[in-house]
Length: 423
Image (cartoon, rainbow, N blue to C red; front, top):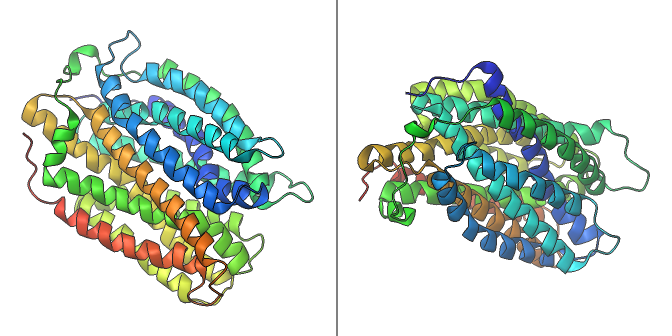
């Protein structure tokens, strides 16, 4: 059994999640409206680029996971990949955050492609590294909690920094947030990268079995694995559709100018506050039960928000529901998938944590890409033809479509409860 890390090393490991989270928020929320509307590329074009790039990027996931499992360098299996990917991610962040006056579709596609490739090269080894360090089920849940708490801290900073830094006159909310967060993430990524690589160990070479040459896709023949991965993909599709238009929904359709950044901040304060509760309840009730509960809370919040009058209290309801849901999604889904990797190791002797984390990352990013891309395209189609009210384009894409997809995700998650078998 792997001994638990000291608190200092755990903090050094999880600190890398802070800038990664700060970098992810502009891509998820601000980049679509900024490039699509302000820079004139068009929401439909932006959505199409997101779809195509994420599909192509998805092909890289399994290879990165597999190669990081097989890497046998002196500094470890995971660290070399993070060391290579982080500078590329910094370059991509600068491209996305500080585009030319008229960037065009090609510039946007290149910048977003580099961003997602670099993100994969850093994200999958970092996820796998944490699960390696966890050792057993409780340890993996602990490392997930610390890592994703860093993610939530980054999200809090992403919500707070644009409010603290003065906004230049004539600058939109999206442009201001992208610029501020791009600078903050660049500085923090450099600092936390040094801390993690220098002070956090990897598993000793003798503790990790050599990965078998059999491809991981065979694991998807196991219904519980396929169901779990499908459920995570659907959850992220629903969240991607919601994230694609929530800024437009709050500030334009609801007319609450300036309310979005405080909403994001409140959402992640709630998320961070509920992480310890998520872990405690999951220890007693089980990961599956808490995941189901988190989805149900968000569904109820989305429907309540869509039905409420366009006023500030509606955003409080949505922030509460979204914060609780994001806590369960971030903390429990990687640990849930890691349990399948542990079962595979026990059954076959193959240590494929990196590949299982690649499957997790693949399902997350494809779901978010399809959700965000499809959401922007549907919104662009509905906007000229549908007026406001309960069936406004923002409500359809940001509330009703996610609710329908979440229902499908719960059906898939239920199938993952069957006994696990591997060939």
